[in-house]
Length: 369
Ligand SMILES: Cc1ncc(COP(=O)(O)O)c(C=O)c1O
Image (cartoon, rainbow, N blue to C red; front, side, top):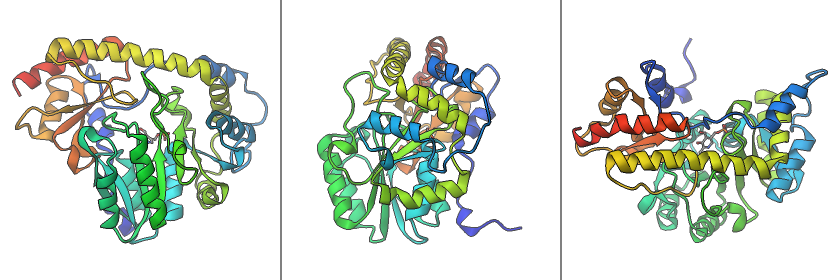
């Protein structure tokens, strides 16, 4: 059998591929998921569960819609609950991108964006980021102007893989440019609550239009629950809700109950997540300063460090050497787009002692590449 032609460009995620071939004692600095324990409210909610495990409404549990809406200051009807924010991204690209349309994606950016555009039959159009990899309204507008068939545009801040954010002004200009062109703007803010300083701006600070994505996977420490959401006006979400219902019926009930406990206890859960993040950042930055001789800067949020390759390093063979000789798994920057080619992404989401050890093992490859 021949698979559908629109899947021809799809490849397994290089993040998984690099992790799967790693030596058993390799330090994992590849995967972007919290390394701390599932917070207690979710553990208790899972332990309390009893009775029939029914599908529940396609739209998800009303009490979780309420809780997510209350967290964001949004009416419950404007919340679409999904199987991770990835479920929302899938449903939105299917709902809004036609074959032949263009979907604007950041470069470097989360590698699911171009893949999901392609699964919808659309063409991902990478747009460059500004100095320091923040959102740059002029560069975004230039890419939009050059894409007459643009239907959807994705922004991600704080960003994966760089941790960079965006200014409120840039976000407002990008939102206005999309509104003028009738392009649906999706603002992926899944790392927004995982920060050390002040909260980064949200699309909701500048407009009620477009769609905001959130998830319990990062700041609420529960990627394995697979619960995320999209926020937007109910009619805008309606087609995506239908796609999502046909894809998975509804997010898993037990996961939603655990997510409900987490979101209701957001004050304590997010404060604790910031402590976990701080401990990891301290471990990473101290080790980096010691072994690389440079003081790294924390980004707008998340747990990634975007590190330039040593001059002349050939990215993929270099990352394989880091893995097999250095025994540290990292992700080559080109996995996130052509403009990521000269970089690697280090994740410091794991155990602080391992992060220190990982940085120690990496450093010699930068002094003698
Ligand atoms: C920028 C970004 N958006 C969305 C996701 C998907 O997360 P989830 O489906 O777990 O909510 C990820 C996961 O790494 C991500 O980095």
